[in-house]
Image (cartoon, rainbow, N blue to C red; front, side, top):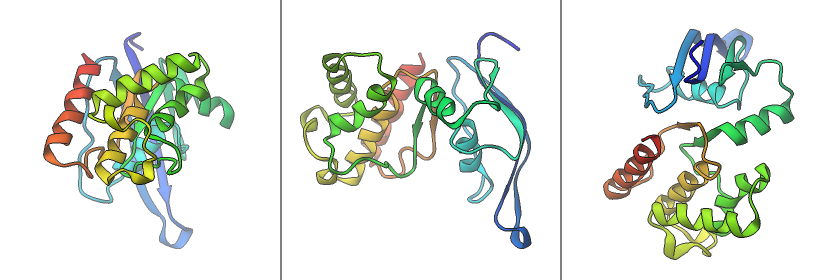
Length: 195
């Protein structure tokens, strides 16, 4: 495997639902994602796009097949090891923001940094401030997320996904709640990070 491959999967199969209504959502999916590349998974609603992203993001296990981060299989890792690997290597932007509503925008962005434990409190605050500034929320650092609009909350979620400078960013319709200007800003930010 190429040393530039940062995320890959081989032979991913996934079934969803109960036995009598079981759906074969993913059939033998294999891919390699090189560092610095951008990919899109497209298809009609219900075809398994989110299911694949959740498996690649180490949030759900495949029924069969393997996922590898930097050429190392993660199939054997415990839940705690998967969580550490996910926090270090993967930034995930969900369709829904999943923010802690009583936390400020800044505190929400700092959550993954606290879990990783590599920066001081001052460094975490500075990084959170820089990321929130980049998504146009530098003036709302200390506002509780429940007092932000849906679009603002999604931009906080984008900043949070970038907090640990992940090798891979997985985005499941990340701009669905954003207006055109903020959608363009979010994509520009993601493209700049890739570069």
